[in-house]
Length: 295
Ligand SMILES: NC(=O)c1ccc[n+]([C@@H]2O[C@H](COP(=O)([O-])OP(=O)(O)OC[C@H]3O[C@@H](n4cnc5c(N)ncnc54)[C@H](OP(=O)(O)O)[C@@H]3O)[C@@H](O)[C@H]2O)c1
Image (cartoon, rainbow, N blue to C red; front, side):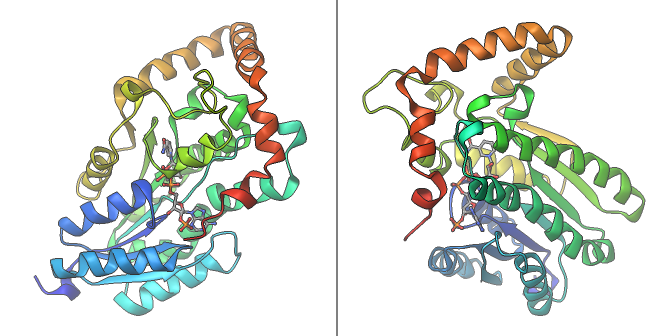
């Protein structure tokens, strides 16, 4: 197939974790790629790795905290490829904190990257996606089933994204654009490395912050394969791994019927597991400043 006949897939958060694994899967499917994240060196090296597959790969380094980034990313992609078939909103990060003591700037960054940027990227891309009857894939999280006070603002961005995802799917249905939500459970990536910096060294397992137990954790390549299949076979919602996500969904349903049960259970969990002061440490570390990538 000629490179210009291939579908064009724009992936945010492509420098690491699931986004990078997804880029490799989508490349194996023979699509052209526009990859974006802040770390341009990583994007370039991924592009060099994937181009020998005969596809065209464009690296677009950008910071999604920058208000001009969505327009610039979509503009650069369309200028290079002439259109977009698939937008995958993958970039995001977790912000562990005691909410009442959170830095307002960190909160703003959390909202900008995880929530505002996907909306504005979609807003910029929609005319091009309508023209090609394309697809939008948004990344939510299984965390939205049960509110976790250690990641309250993070969960709120993902819950907001899920609501908007459904509204947008209904709006664009008649224009031929498919809109999918992926809800991953825990996947071992750099996402947890950032959270782990706040966990007590050699301490007890803390389910609010520590990397999840191995049996809960999905393999990053498996998750990427499942998501890549959505390009040809879109579904409304994809849970990965389903067997981890469903128990959380059922617990969430239970707490909606008996909200007092959720309050008692989850407040006690927070009370007991924060006794090591992890969340306070997260606040003191000014998480975003410290977690910013340097390589
Ligand atoms: N891992 C899990 O267990 C899990 C579970 C549920 C949902 N998710 C969601 O999956 C997505 C990716 O997570 P992951 O596990 O792959 O994490 P990851 O390995 O930490 O990757 C995060 C990606 O987001 C990019 N990013 C972060 N801040 C950015 C900014 N300001 N501007 C542009 N790009 C930015 C990072 O690139 P740069 O640092 O180079 O900018 C990186 O490519 C997130 O939306 C996360 O909420 C993850």
